[in-house]
Every structure is written in structure tokens, then in C-alpha cells.
Amino acid sequence: MQSARAANGQDIRANSNWLVDAMNAVLKGLRRQESYIMTRHELSALSDRNLRDMGLSRSMIDDIARQSVSRS
Image (cartoon, rainbow, N blue to C red; front, side):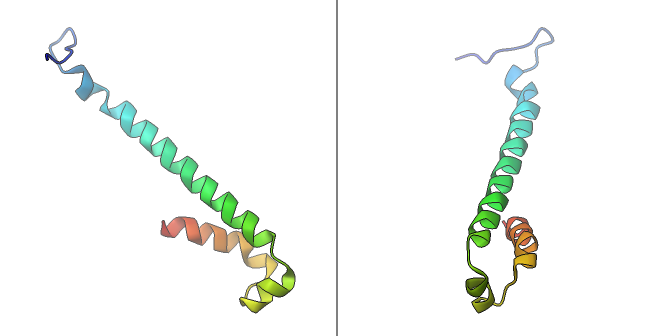
């Protein structure tokens, strides 16, 4: 099977790698944002007592969600 070639003879698939890379970066960002939102949502749903039992306070939730995303 022949590869598609542009007018100048370059492989079109090689030229489209930037698009694949850009789409992968967008998807990675969306996954990270989803993870942040889910972590924040789940921690926010806990009672103050449950948070205290884990050594946390409500004011820490955003930072914890951000840290969980930065580690992944």
C-alpha cells in the first residue's frame, strides 16, 4: 500500500503528526480537568466531621484536588 504524498513528495501522515500531538494534549488537559472536578466534588460531599477525621478542612479541598492532578 502506498502512502499518501503531498505535492512536494512528503508523506502527508508525517505532516499531520502536529495535529495528533495537539489533540493528545487537549485530551490530556480535559482528563486532568475532569479528575480535578471529580476529586473536588467527592471531597466536598463529605461532612465536616469526615474531613476532620482525615485531618482535612474544607479550605484545603481545592489544593488537594490540584495536587492530585499534578501527580498524575
